Amino acid sequence: SIVYLNGAYMEASEAKISPMDRGFLFGDGIYEVIPTHQGKGVGLGLHLKRMENGLRSIGVEFDAEPLKQVIAELLEKNDGDDLNVYIQVSRGTYEKRFHGFPDKVEPTVFAYTWQIGPAHVADKAQAHTLKVVTADDLRWQRCHIKSTSLLGNVLHFQQSYGEGYDETLLFNGDGNLTEGSSSNAYIVKDGVVYTPPLSDELLPGITRKILLTILAEHSDIKVVERAVSKQEVLDADEIWMTSASKEVGPVIQVDGQKVGSGEIGDVWLKAQTLYSKHCY
Ligand code: PDD
Image 1 (cartoon, protein in one colour):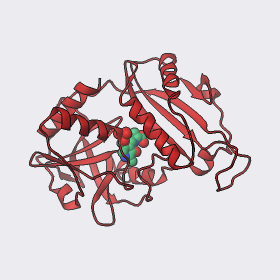
Image 2: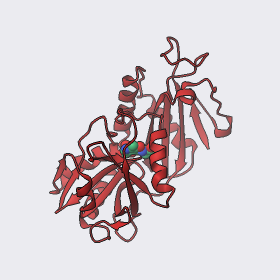
Image 3: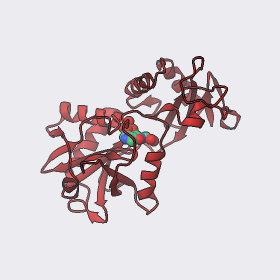
């Protein structure tokens, strides 16, 4: 595939980054994953804004607007109607390994694409269901930053993936739900959707933002942003996980027990139907 690195397009095998890059040495960078269908990015502006905010929060001033052109060119140079775009901006390459922010360093900008499935269908028979496990959230206290330092998330994901499951639902020190290792989390009880409010304990997901906006503007489904306890998760009628690639993912099993009836729920069907209608 053709990738983008620091102003140039090239074959992936030609792309070279110094091992002295802070992205490599420290995980000192910010990233985004943006789904595109027929050349259109889902929530493109929101993703680029989050990237700028994340970079500002680590002291890197960066204008993400030109990335729109980079994304358009990458989509043109790579075949496929349905591509994910990964963009990573690290603080840059410096002459030596040193913890402080170097004075003179240019961000390293890398982007590549890969084929994904077509946009999801809001259909219970075709939906990809998820089986999840629960765990204590052992990541850091800046989970709102989409940092490339993902070892905490990687270890949590492996807790489920390594056992043949799909995601790990994480709980903070008070026993309340934060999010998944790579997705946001929701429960449905008696027709009402509950999801943890934004804080430094979870990523402000773009799929979350789009979904909550659509539900508020185009449905009578009530959404409440408040703390959700582990017991409420275990007693939920439905559980969903959202991310750029999962869209609204229906969870049918937690820790080996059925969620609700063990079948995909009706509120999920309404939510994914609206999401599909408004995003493509
Ligand atoms: N993951 N929470 C975490 C910890 C995530 O890593 C992600 C996304 C989300 C959902 O965010 P969004 O709706 O903006 O995709 C929530 C990406 C896709 C990844 O790391 O591959």
